[in-house]
Image (cartoon, rainbow, N blue to C red; front, side):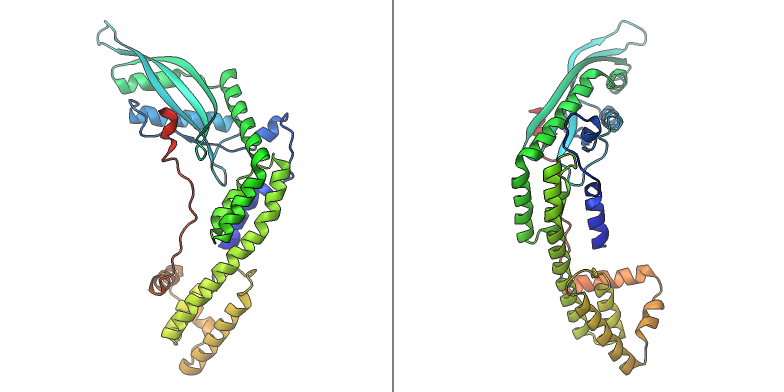
Length: 320
């Protein structure tokens, strides 16, 4: 599992990087999230969802769709109502004029990197239909939007190029506090277009990952040992073994884990005449093993927390 996590994190780091801001292909290597917050006033839910979908389509078309490994930058939007009229037709229609604003932001440092706005109109028998028709009429495939995205991407590249030492130092600080997943996520978020910083991150991430799996290995050995000490029989061996089986073979204490498994298997065979490998094969199914593992973790009291990923809860500063 840990090696799979590292592989996912390092996928952007496995190709040769460039550092030429003039190449469109390089700029396209930066991935952006898209968010239109629920809290944006006066946009009906369906219209808000439609606007968000349209933004996702356009950033994908420009080669920036999907969140990065360590998402920090996002495209967001708001709509301001300029005019509202009721047509004299039968049935009457609500005719709205909107100013739509797009922002490319660094939501961590609360920086506005790029913005653009345009006017749109929509009419319908309800406010939701008027908003929806206005959004559908917006053409995001134009030069203004392209300049908006390119300008924001260039500032993202400038951010990493100018602050690389601080980013790596921050990751090392997180690792020193045993926040290994957060540290790996921070380094993996550096785009490959920022060649020097990207390669420095590649050098820094290896030792942090090694410390990560070594730390986890020690915790899992302690967990398994405690289980076995309290229940030195075949049931305890299965519980402890399900924990030890998740230790990364590249960790420094992997051999210690294998030694514990050997001792448990010999004792179970001696006391109960039960073969360890046979017991593992005759478990009902993977779900049974997973339930045993969850129970073991709970009983020993080991907290397994996911690394703290940034959220967009504080993105509302854009709209104030």
